[in-house]
Image (tube, rainbow over all chains, first blue to last red; front, side, top):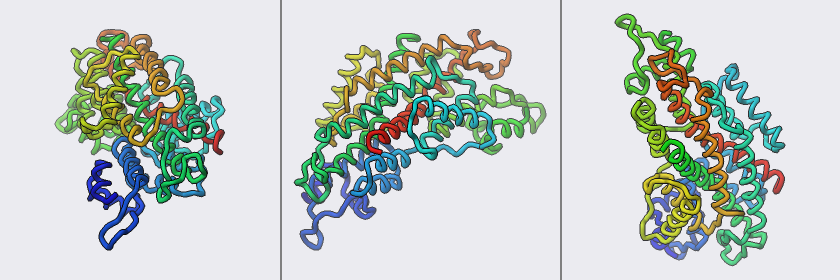
Length: 228
Length: 228
């Protein structure tokens, strides 16, 4: 398809597509003349992925570039790719003062929880810092985890994560995606690494929003029942 | 305490505190001379709340103003307050094209899920739109919910939300907070509405980060086990 159709089908303005091309976030089309290029379904899919990450995931362009680079890197393992996505996602609150007792206690709480859950997590995972800073802020305000505490949250997330990550192996056909520039590659073939990669990135980023939105809806309902 | 001590204990620069005072996000201290004012523990607590919402929750100032106004509004019910917080939180993706079949299908999916869960949610809850737009983006990319589907996520969030919202009633002492300008009010007295309100806002905003951080850690572990 030509640029105009790519724009129409993706809902992304031509100027924006050109920006993504210039920034190498979207691979170039196949030139058919000095001023025309042909784009395929893989370009459409990549554009939709970019828009989903930017519009819904609020992923900044610098992070997007690193995420897409690892999606397209045939030598990157799935574990490395998921790690890259995790490490690129925000928010990145300012790092705490190491002498702050609330920060020290919260960091210890995170280390203990990870050990208790038996999780394999690198020492420099940004989610550790995000969690510890959040728990430090809650401590500073005298707020204790409700009910069964942090452990209940960790167990709920572990159950969902296991299903999600395992589904990347079990259901490769659930997210059919031709490899960029090789439209005939079937998802179950090794060349469908891009399909798995795109699906993994999408799941990792967008399901955070799904979880947050569902939690807000569930809280509105709980509040209506208890306080309404 | 004087401004300098408030700044030292909260870790918030004096210029920022003055900005919050000018913007009426922080109530004025008690003037002790033409150029000095005295601040109390309630001011410190409010400053910490603001910083937690801004730094970790990434709540913009306009939303913060509306959230703090309802926290301080003695006539607002807890349900109204929680609703105000929910409705002020982002992200706010651009509204979809009503003719888009993916958006229509995703909206229907959200309505069906809410009905199936028996949730009481207003038709204009922004979390409905956030969820539907996210599901529409996933549909557009051919990505199906993994495993037990959306229902598993909804049930996990419902279980956590029930505990959280109920804890606002059951454990009023878990978050002691003197009312602004009335340091002697006990948390269990009606005047402690501000304590409940601050605690509720904090929980609603910060536990989203806790959940997101825990999910990323759980995913890193699942990925290490399955792909590492």
